[in-house]
Image (cartoon, rainbow, N blue to C red; front, top):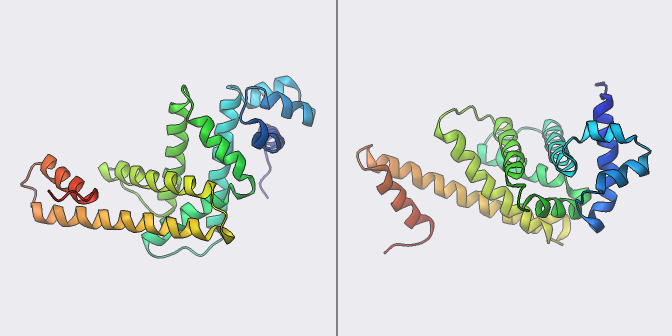
Length: 220
């Protein structure tokens, strides 16, 4: 059994206490202090655990969610197809926040505020990278970035849909996710066809233009 470090124990304790208040008060600057009072945690421990205040708390919340996702994935049978692997990743990442959906929604709003764009991009990248690495991606070329950008759009849109999904066991969300994944697969198939058609002779800008027309239904 892995022993939890004292610093990690403080972070877990404070986050758990904070999540009770987040749905009502949001991710405020006073959130850590309030959680510290509830848990009788010394102020110097709070500063050490969360040096950047609530931004550090938001980062820990996101990273702990990624860890939960990976733990859940490790406990399931790994699918064979890449599409199924990615679908499984997105589902498990959403379910990692299922017990605190209002807090997750508030976190998304908090990370969209001015001054937090860099943190939001970093945390989003960490989540997407964890998903692709679990799925077996070892690319180091431009595909490394395009895969994460494409999956990022899927994750973001699916989470936004999930925030207001009242269907049983989030069935509507999973159907929405399947449709988004299908869009991605169609797009990737189209890119492959254009590469074959191009034969590496047409300028990249021409191919991108054709892809854009196909993607957005512009056939003019």
